[in-house]
Image (cartoon, rainbow, N blue to C red):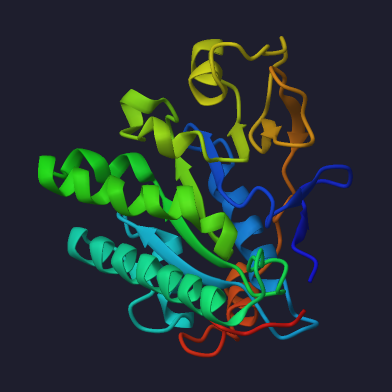
Length: 264
């Protein structure tokens, strides 16, 4: 199965190899539009083999993304603190169930991608809005669940698409162990070099260029060299009826039909 997504005409993201993605940027930078483009592309992966990506959503601000719950099975979309933990627990539980299936039924060394199994993605919008509302015990549990997905998910095709305004470990509440697992990192729109370095790391060379909304800097393992970022323009979704696009893209979301499906 082909797990690749075109971010631009020349930048191809192999989601199975670099499954976790982080999109950062200020309000109005275009990060939400980029996340919608990615989610649509993810949902259509496997159309030819009927193993479409299964989508789960956390949207604490209950914005437009939250409304997509209309097209998803019950228990897939979270807008409150209680629902967030329910979705995280469910996502991790499904990941462990797939891991058990592969261990018991596949040949030694098999992974979900080598078996052609569908992706499962947690689309986590405005991550930084959630963490300040958590007490110490809740924050610990929240990070433990996310860490399990980030650290173990790639082998089982379980990934995170995280969206946040600030991607620094401190300000966003993002655990450093989790951030290290993002193979694709984008920062959308114009920002101070300090903000870019918080996203990509202190050792990264930031080019002197002014970016417009919809443009960004990108770091992708296997594509960009260590210590460098690449300038790119996100696909333009202007004029598209996104509601209809998502309704079609999410037409094959099913809790039971895809977890153990093998195509290779």
